[in-house]
Length: 419
Image (cartoon, rainbow, N blue to C red):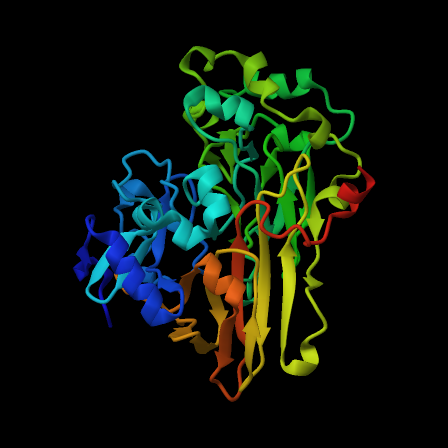
């Protein structure tokens, strides 16, 4: 077992390390697990993290209920460690953050187009895994996030069956506001913050969650994610505003409502309510415009593998990210080409990806290195990555997510087609 924390951190000459690793691996970087705690949630225990390590950051930091993938985005937690939320690439006895690797080798890793436009890997993904629901909240749009020096945050959800063998306490998610809801009603909920349950969920509607499906959620949309373990490709930001003050009897402090709001607006209820994308929240066709069912990329099942779109569609006319689920049957080898760089996580089985061994572990210690997470460069993706399932009995299943505007051929949501 290789211990991640015993591997030397390198901050200089990263470019030469990256180039050597890519040559040896066929254009791939192996990434170490990136664990993130949340003080206001209860871990759902489906991330394969050893139960003794759920509070590895300390009880005061809260339990680990998230694992971030191919992340160059810092986690916006209080009392965070300096590198919290940042993925590390591992090269032999050395490791370096993916953030540093992209800074030093941007075009080589993510491609010239993304590098020239963003000067960073602008997206990331995570598993969030909770015992119960999350507070009804929103992520600010660019208009509001930039007021505190941050970026807006659209996001998406997919519920992998491999991590949802049990739904935990509340496998339903509240989305938006019931049509006909008024801004005055939402404002009243904020006025009642310290008077017990503020009743924000009375203004919303819950949807039953289904393994193997997902949702596309734009900024400014209120949502209270349920207790499924969720794969969440999203924009590289950690802004949010919690609008629900009690969750399963647990207090949500006012500070989590206003953490990404200018200080002078912390008591301005009208300003806080104005962060809500009202049209999107009261949309009478909300499910039609946001619900995702997997769609096969092509008819390849007869060749022993199938690739499916699991995240697709546009938010306010822009494709921020997309994601696919690749399943390779036992004993099958296939070559898969993609349009751009991606982060990949193995959720079932074992095999090879170009020159690297990959497998989905059954249990992970907090400090342990794994073989389940890979960052694939744009050039390797375009050339075609060779996937091989070395098992004789079990499918090899992987999730991979892509950056903005990488897959213009991706399907559209029904609602997008009508707009």
